[in-house]
Image 1 (tube, rainbow, N blue to C red):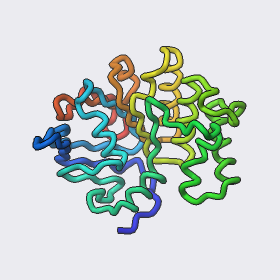
Image 2: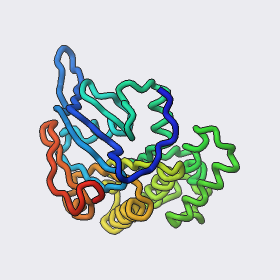
Image 3: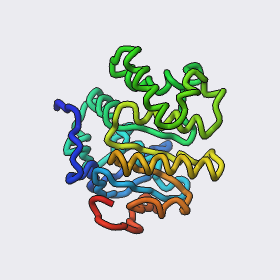
Length: 244
């Protein structure tokens, strides 16, 4: 199934889940985590997913990020059937179309901020000079050009998260998945990071899906979803369902 670069058209659902279920095996027992989740997420939407610890938020994010396959149900990304995609095809889409931002930053400690940001392009085979040039442009956008040659241990938590955002954006993804991206940050820094993500969503029409347990952040998102005991519920939709 050849999959090329995804075309960015905000009239089409980027993600469609139908009856998606997933669980984990513990010994002889199967532990259900997601139960028959059905969901459309439209291009350019900002979407927050709430839920208690263990509710299935991270499991859902792993499926949306093509890191795990659901046990059952249908999953289409930009019209392509992800259940039929090969491992190589999934890796290619993940690298070209999805940017990840994690609570723990997931930066490589031995690399500078510049080389951490350039890493996704290196995986694509982009020459080092060109990859670093693109990485520097992204660091400038998040206000960290002067820290380009610093390693993660030499940066504050907020600066590390901005590096992670630059890395997520360097490949011009159609989707950003953020897993508790402000969880380790003080309130002011957390607000700054949230504003940066929402500005990217608004100005570049990048679809943004963020998982959090912090209900105070939900009002800033176009859609609010909650996972409770493995089931998905819509809390609020603000404005146009397709383009909020």
